[in-house]
Picture 1 (cartoon, one colour):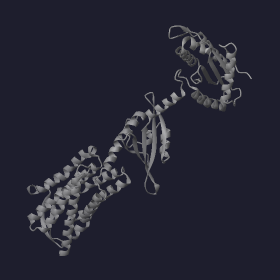
Picture 2 (tube, helix red, strand yellow; picture 1 turned 90 degrees about the horizontal axis):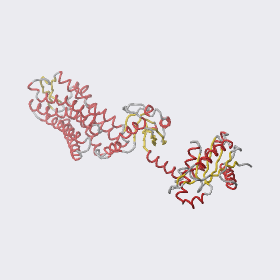
Picture 3 (cartoon, one colour; picture 1 turned 30 degrees about the horizontal axis):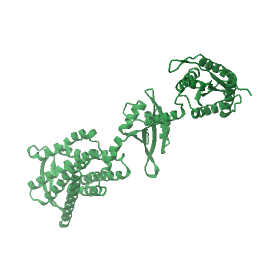
Length: 521
């Protein structure tokens, strides 16, 4: 008996020291999420253990009842404080705190009823002291039905903490998953051992204080707290980064259901996909219902990035979408992280730079580089589709004389006026460029040289009949010469087509000017 009692005493004293150490650690880190509820839990557990030790070593019914009541503080505070810890540590205070406060009413009410039981006997009907082979004498409590029910409810409260921590663990990296797993194990082990005591040990007549059952859990908790420096900033920083990062993040499970998101992802989805309902719990394929390329990105289940063009409010937007599969052992994919980056501003800037690089600053037509690039592309397509293509080469007649007579500023106005006439006369799909000082070129798809002559005559006549006012109010009359060529040889290169039109233009300027010449071998 002495040996068993010594072991029991050693366990209780050792457990109280471990709990106190954890409490001190929590006190120093009390500003970190989860630290203060865990501090309360450790204080309550310490009272539970100390009360158990003193109950064993005191004589007399009243003294044992007193220390049993001290233990009840731990019995009823530890479960609810474990739930508070889970809520606070997982940063779900705003969402769940009010429900925890409502739930806390059960253990608090139970505790008050126990401490005042002598006045109403709602929780207990009496006590008996029994001889025990381990502790010498033990106190047996006779509970009422209400007392038994409230005690049973209190027993199941920590299950809520386990559920919250399991859900939170899914969102953490592998390193932090180990920490949470140990906390879950600590809570679960206490529940399991308490059940074993109630179901098997108590019925055998062996009395083991409930506080002793808390020892394995306290050892696991002690290891977790000090091994992993539990209340570090990293998990807190992770949640903060998740919320403030300027990229949208969606977490999707293996069935394609959105299980988590950050605020910026919600903003982007509302803006570009017009989804105003709650997306958590929705299928990611419904969220991106009109974007087949994004759906295919998810179906690949591989690290991939694509650029998506979107339309909203008559404007264009651009998203960079990347998928990052989440794998467990044996490379089993259990979900995907989707990162959405709004690159609209950057993309529009790049497009603007490209436009600037390919546009003539004076006329806003394509410059030589832009014209060559566009005409090469459409001519290649026309050759494949066997469509006729015509080229016009235009040159302002006596442009040097215009500059000498009216000045270079008015010469620029002439070029701008010609650009406007070309733009008004030609189709939107026609390619127009200023390829030299006063030289312009046009590529027309689906137009042979016969129809090109009709169009060229409209341009020539439009220029001839235009009356352009100079800066000083004088009237500037000018004309253009035009050369025409077409791809009568369907395999004709861009360079040859332009050269043929240029030869025809040279002939037009060499003869009468203000005229049109069609290239003829």
